Length: 248
Image 1 (cartoon, rainbow, N blue to C red):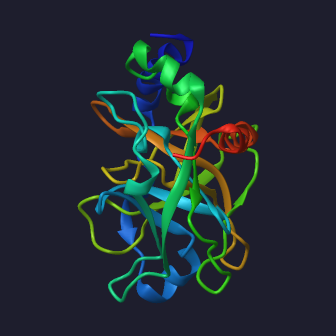
Image 2 (tube, rainbow, N blue to C red):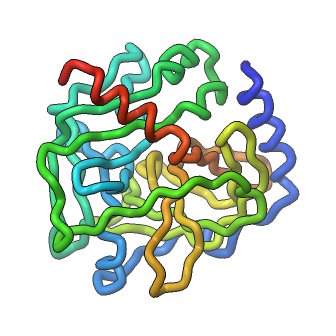
């Protein structure tokens, strides 16, 4: 286990003393309120919901690297098998887009051999969509850096794998500790929320601010923790990979 993995393991023990946030278990957002979160989507592989993702420009989305990398082979899922479903409710979707390219940091693939938590710091992927998403369909989330997360309150929004066709909200999660862009928060997540956007708590009339994405959960004896990965410092490298790669 590398330095980051050792640190994250220590954080699991530290956070056992912290109670779960009040909104940790998640609530389903009603159709009217969900209009604010149409930039949050589910990522499907061959038609099956596997993760969450978020629109960050009219043609880009962000998610977790492990959502687009095969755990057994270490190869990326072909872009043609990926689709982003934005703003889904029981009434339909705000937009559906295919994916024409994805980028994963090389260090993510290289660090897979460490096993455990060692590669969390690289667990971010960028998706390029097959057509722009109009402002009428969904407004992209603004990505900002998060250099001092400890003590901040954040919200996690995403689509649970076995949940309803509606976005769920985990509200008021506390950032407990952070190292190398991996932050531990005291909210519990479930399958399907990998890659979900982590948003700084803001007033209802303020534009949402994306600071991280969900990487993994860790179950403790008394509580549940979630590890989230800061997005902004990784975006330039991911975009450069897209420009330099041969399309899939």
